[in-house]
Length: 267
Image (cartoon, rainbow, N blue to C red):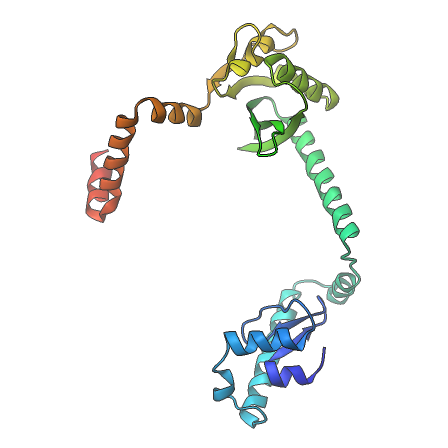
C-alpha cells in the first residue's frame, strides 16, 4: 500500500485486516493494486474529483475529515473492551490460510454439534421430520430435522444428512436412521411424532420406514404426520382448476390495500 493512494483515490490501510478501505463508502478493496483502486474511484465516485480537485486544500481537508471519522468509528467499536490493545493484537495475529480456516470451521461445527447433543439430552421430548431425495449428481440423501423444547422456546435444527449409498427402500432408511441414533446415544423413548412425505418407502405399513419404526422394540408409539407441503403439491397437480381459483382469489385480495383491509375485517 502506498500513502499517495490516499490523496489520489481516498483509500487508507486498515491495520487490522491489512486491506485498503475506501474512506467515502467504507468499502474494502480486494488487493493492493493501483488499477483496482483507481477503477473503483473513477466508476463509483466519478464526480468526486470535480468537487474536491486533486492537490487542493479542500481535498486535503476532506481526506483528513474522513480519515478521522474512520478512526473514531474503529475506536468506538472496541470502546467497551478493557483490553482493546490485546484484542487488536490477537486479530492481527490471526492466520487466515485455507487450511487454518477449514480447521476452524470444523471446530465450530464440532462445538455446534456438542451443543445440539447437550440440548437433546436435556429435552424431555422431540419430533422428527424426514425426507429422502436425490440431487443432480444422482446421489441420494436422507435429511432429518428435529424439533424439541428448550426452556421456554421450541428449537428446530438440522439433525443429520445421511448418504444413502445404494438403495432407498424403507429398510435401508430405517437401518441408516437406527444406526445414527445408536452411534450418537440418542434416546428413542423421547420420540413423540414423525413427519414424512407420502412415498411408499416412508409410509408403508409393512416395509415402509414408519411401519418398521412402529414394530421396533424400544421405540414408543408416536404420531404420524404427512408433510403439508407435499399435500399442497399433490392437490395442485390433481385439482389444477381449484389451485387456479385459489391463486386468483389471493391475487385479488393482495392487489389493492382496500381489498386486503376488507378481507382482514371479514376473517
